Length: 483
Length: 95
Image 1 (cartoon, each protein chain N blue to C red):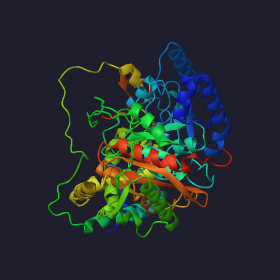
Image 2 (cartoon, rainbow over the protein chains, first blue to last red):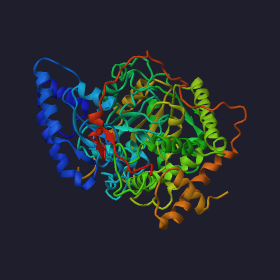
Image 3 (cartoon, chains in turn brown, blue):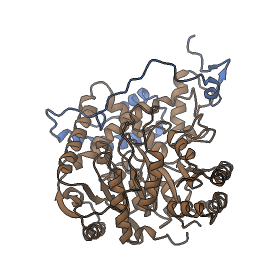
Image 4 (cartoon, each protein chain N blue to C red):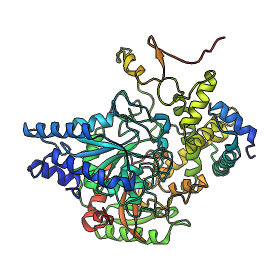
């Protein structure tokens, strides 16, 4: 049963081939058997899952239908789950049981999804390798000596290893698309504001966006349908109608104009990845797409701008962790300043502390114009590049990452080396655009992803193109050895 | 201009982060490495460009001034490190 996609599970549950409870028990046993190798879960919610599965079976028995009714899911451990530890991968929140559910969690639960657990992640979503977690690194099921990517690395590893068919992730600079690429999954970062951020522990509020991670575009469509939509509780959520993402999956690609940004194929890209990306372009051309070269001249400025904006917002967001109202508190504080400093010094890991300090510095008196304001101006230049490109093309295509998954520990000594791995994904966050990564082949047994970017609110187009591609390729069906 | 150890101590104080003395050289190096990356921005000509704060340039929505939340003090204080009589406890602030 563990090989089934969400769409196949929906059919199996509808025709009573199996019950949600049977499926849930099967997957819980798989998590118990295989997760010790991967460390992809921080919490497994067995009792909650079995209760939700029985309730879903009862709803189905009473005549209710729904693609997600009784289907399993795991949530990245920064989506608040009421009464269940929501750690954000941090010692700071190791003891934090959220007093409410995130809107994404509520919506998927109301659709009947069964929560198997909370997945491991880089601490406060800061990282590209899932090595900064307080709960230890996650291993890539394609090669246990390699990282799964991050920050949604636990979600990626769990789904890639067939511990469950789908999981939620969040993407601030590539944290859905990059781990999806590195583990052979399909992952979608929606348009900024498409999915509610309410109850999603904030890293960089103007960049963060939740989205689905699964093995197929078809499954991402089902999941996004359940997640997307206006939420009055999130003041940045956009009140736009939600498309029917499954309805157009099979639409023709005849005449679809795809732009290949020349900056995405320059120095720094592993030539073997470049070849696989070109092969995916050929496959899409066969399906009727028309390809042209475009330019996104400010792409290279994305990383420096991101590493001002994201830390600046993080330094402000993470000021709420003060050892007073919830989270870690140091022992025997001698005064209030000591309480703050030691609680935060003990509760936050190295990478989180670095980013808080970079943000604090960038926002401090005398530096604001040179850093934060300059970064926001570059953000406009990057958005303008995309708007110009989308005058000529319907979709932008390139590699998701410059390299395949690296070895655990390989980029730990220099933070900047890991930052550079996000060069192709970060600009979509700065511009707020939707992006998707889909499997496109392997280099030395490690998966490679192709990234598609579309204009605002055209998630359906990304899913359509990825789905059609997955009808003529079988990369996404490959399973890692041993799982 | 590279950050010195004293700059890092000042930033850590502003951020209310208690750092181990022994970690300061390593943290100073890491911050200088990150700021070196960030400083590449200064070469970009942004003259006349308006800063972009929200990707869709949406402004904050307003709502009617009505009570929408109910009191959940007990639920919220149940997860606090220390409370007494409905108040959060902190070390003595005023001598």
